[in-house]
Length: 280
Image (tube, rainbow, N blue to C red; front, side, top):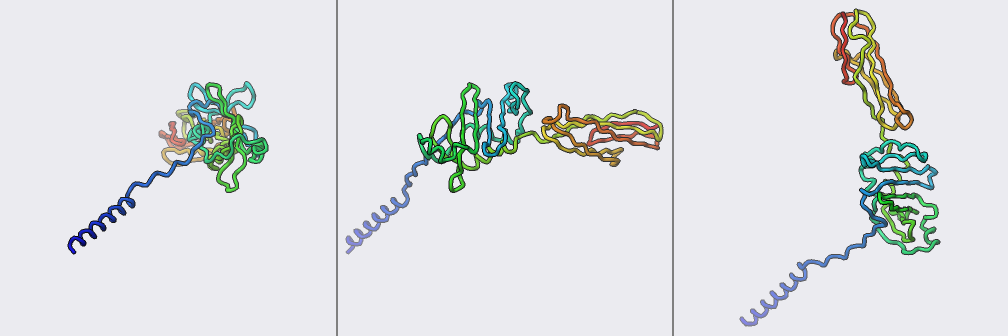
């Protein structure tokens, strides 16, 4: 009996050990899903971009990188003309060159598609086209066709071949947004130190305080000027200026006029920029 009990215990332990091994052993890793790049290059080599939304009727937009500061600027709208303003880096520098340098494709739909298949996926009238030129002169002609039936991916290809891929809709949304809402720098205002018409006047003599306001952005905007004298708000004015898209000199001189009856020194502050005058 004792021997029989020992044999039963050994059998139980063997079964338990085998069960533990199969339960606890590392599971084999699932094969990685294939990942495709429709095109791929180092974004530092991107030299110029021309993009359009053919179905929108909007004119194409072009951008070019300057060698002196490695920043992108709007390309001239007239051949041989001067380059436009620098792009808004809050939108462009936040990732546009990286996104253009090669989005990861979700699927390879077709290789060597026929012309009829290319048309079926919406490439005869693409939703988006882009020409990417590198600093060595190499170009990539990118086309984005229709949205897939699930509404999650766009069909994409290079014009140089008939391989069709899908890329995430979010990629298209960001890139198309650069065209539909160009990345012009918003209005941004600077003011110079105010000037006075006279540093010293007699009582009840009007004094003009002038300040030059400049819009350093590309888009038009408005700016509030608050004039204080010895800390008290005396007057406010609003100036509206075009940006450099419209004006070659987007600035204006704004003048306040004050009259003081009491002798003394007066500190005039316009948006923290100060000047003084004295009443005798």
